[in-house]
Amino acid sequence: MAKKRISVLGATGSIGKNALDVIRAGRDLFEPVLFSANSNAAALFALAAEFPNAKIAFSGRRAAAEAAGFDKRDGVYFERAGLLAAIAGVEADITLNGISGAAGLEPSLSALTSGSALALANKESMVMAGALVLKTAEQHSLPVIPVDSEHSAIFNLLRRQGKEGLKEAVLTASGGPFRTWSMDQLKNASPKDAFAHPTWNMGAKITIDSASLANKGLEVIEAARFFDLDADSIKVVIHPQSIVHSMIRMNNGAVYAQLSRPDMRLPIYDALCYPEIAPRQIEELDFDNLSLSFEKPCFERFPMLALAYDALRAGGRCAIAYNAANECAVSAFLAGKIPFTGISDVCSRVLSMDWSGEAGDLNSILESDSKARAAAGL
Ligand code: NDP
Ligand code: MG
Image (cartoon, rainbow, N blue to C red; front, side):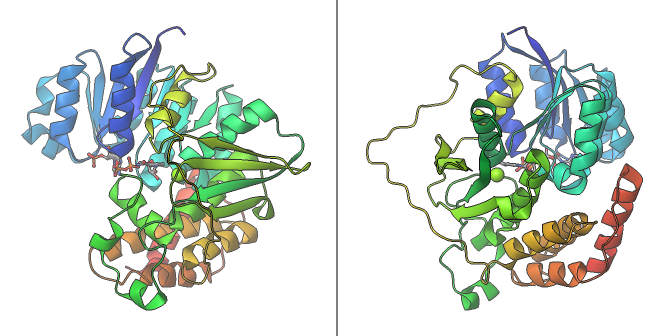
């Protein structure tokens, strides 16, 4: 594989750190050309020292970065506009988007319009604007490669198996820290309880989403957009060990699954190497003493999953509203303003408004996002 020029957006986060591991282990394969962060100036500085040829973009307040001595180095971009200009300017072969939340959408589009393939961890890009992202990619003849482990699994299974004869995609979910909690216990769940994720170590927002199953809800919508499937062709199954990353069921009854240790370096490495099949970089799965179990998700205790299906079925701008309301509600929960069960109350209330009518272009998508945030009223 020819050496690839890589931009890592959200380089200081959980996906970013895993990507850095992949890049360090494959210095002959990857040349980082851009790193971005939002508020963690110290970590971005350290990356700039380690990779002096890479540009860096600090999308938070310029004053904060300057106070940390940032302006004394060439190739530094500041604030949101600087981030978008940096993405467009560095001529990356591939951009890994590990930014959290709706803030990742415009960077995804900037990468594609500037001619870079997109390795997409930022699921919100697909939930808010799947059609626009895929259309932009097609216009520029560029691939969008999923990094989310479930979608990476399905993408790889379909690559090998073909989509013909596909009956449904089966997304696995660990079930999160509250898998066995009762309704009463969930009412009193604290952020600390939610942070005790059994199998994955991730950023704050996705960890809360994993506890409420909103993460799986977002992933159902993400799968619908990525693989052009309707709600009835996407199933969720709880699999607490997080070894089976997802499955495809064919019309002839066969089910194909992708298994590996729960390690985000695999889907990241796979995506960065695409279209080549990556040689092994992570530890092999050991079958000795491995037992796998599966159970049905409980839609009553985890209404965020049910609401995602409702939003997908209703269409229009419902997915944008679901994502925005959830993002506001998660922040409010983390700030101690609402209880854990309030997250789905907020989303349910926002989704009960009229979100009919498509939002096709970026401005109308961002407008609907703002409207839903205002409606959340937090
Ligand atoms: P983190 O919170 O750990 O990291 C987020 C990164 O984005 C940080 O580098 C942060 O910078 C940056 N960032 C935050 N806000 C903004 C903003 N407004 N503008 C620009 N950059 C910003 O998140 P994760 O790495 O856990 O998740 C990133 C994305 O990947 C999410 O969409 C998540 O759903 C998805 N994902 C994550 C997985 C995981 O294992 N973590 C698995 C599958 C998908 P700073 O550090 O300076 O704040
Ligand atoms: Mg996932």
